[in-house]
Image (cartoon, rainbow, N blue to C red; front, top):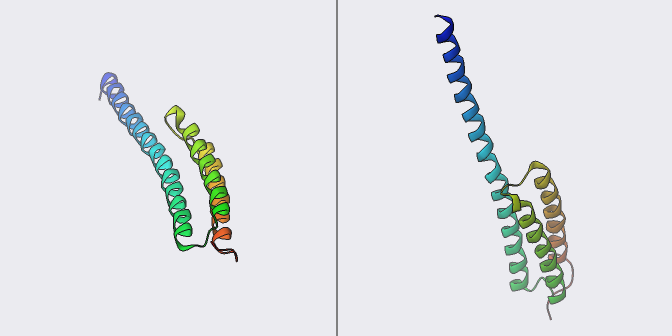
Length: 114
């Protein structure tokens, strides 16, 4: 192979590799968004089930809904630039973990709807 052919082969390989890297990066960002959204949706369903079963009082429900509202606001803020960064995902996961524990504690305490 002469110099030109080797150079052309390198350029083609580099272009293909960089295209694959960009594609891989683009596919990971929506996964983060989907994961955060899915979890927030599941937590909202847990609150709804607690209300329906009578495990949550109206006051507990209002407080949990307020926390979920803040979470939805934070998700929207993180998605404002079109993607959720790894740092934003860590912050949102911590917030979701805290909310999840609150939901569990409120659903399993001795209080019930009257």
